[in-house]
Image (cartoon, rainbow, N blue to C red; front, side, top):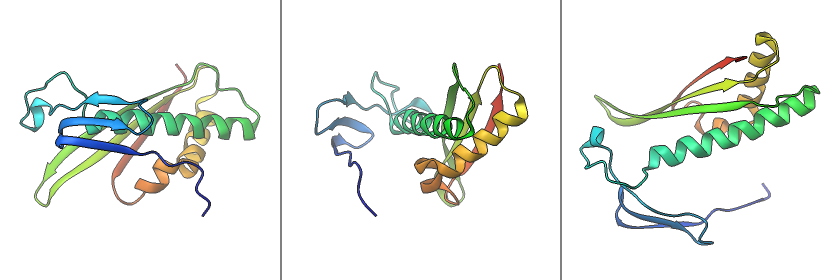
Length: 140
């Protein structure tokens, strides 16, 4: 495969309770551990929040591409994402919920676009079969 872009980042400190930055300086943030995972819920972000934003942004791009190909408008569309860190008998895992809102289109058409975006989105492709991803959609 041809590489189109590579993000580079470094984390220092104590992992989830450290500091993360990208090599280009566009992201430079402290990391904190949420109370739900035994942390102090400090002022920094956490990996689940970063993943939630990244997945939602990527999925939104995929949705817009599918809409262009279908020659429909998805103006005002939004992606709300939730990334949950879960504990089970065999350790920790994550689960994702993506809620897609596209005003002005019939619900069936939105559902088709969401499924097409899920097949195309690089984040969806990378996680397929590895984590639970729940997709929902609405028109308002």
